[in-house]
Image (cartoon, rainbow, N blue to C red):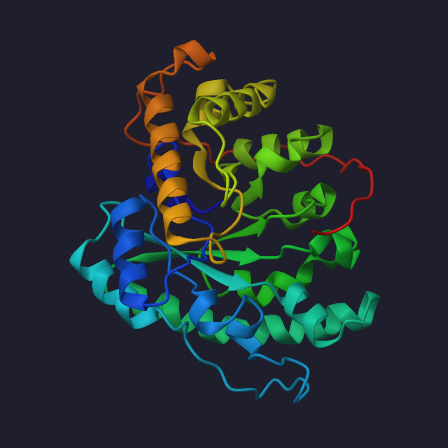
Length: 333
């Protein structure tokens, strides 16, 4: 498990990736001002959705080729400028990339099984070249990258736990990698992939027994969980969100002490705010900050013990791998 994550403070705040701004410089300023773990913003209102950002407005028009042109995210240069002006103390930056399974399904909607995985593996290699370039530029400036692969509809792809190699090129391009899933989560697949970090929509989907087993093992071996507890358009009250996080942390206590789970937690929205309004994004960012601050301060009236840590404890020992348990099939969002 990557030691970079130990540099994050407990309950660090971050965003999923997409923002409603149309000017990259405005988005970059916002990210560095409002979030403790900054991220290179994606701007769908100006540059298209998460598929168009990487493949263009009509991904299937020209077909797929590994020689397809690559480009850095539109907000990359303004983000780098702002990052050097306001560097976080931990020197960590979150990068997002639309996942190869998601892009493969956009390119070839009828593909499935081995055909889908083969195409996704090619796309993963193609994406990894851009990610490696971003990570290298950050390293030259003294920052380390955390890569989060966004696979919103992964449950619909029907991947088997033996097919996690589709992400190998991407995870080999950085020291630390994770998965974000804003729809139904195929926990057995995530457990087998063993990412360093998992981001998901806790508020909407909760945690079933398979989720608890997977996340308990993730934290035991030193990983981190980003709890998505705020809807991008109608964020719930901060008190409700803190109770959800407290319940989630307590539910993993059979394997990890609750304080250890809290220290391995980050707070975020359930999905990006790219198609919401700027006022919605400001409200979500404020709610995320308030929830993290309340829990750090104690939050004892929500049943949460004070965190009181300047950094996460060492959780690098690996739990014995168990046979993944099946869970009810779910459709992707």
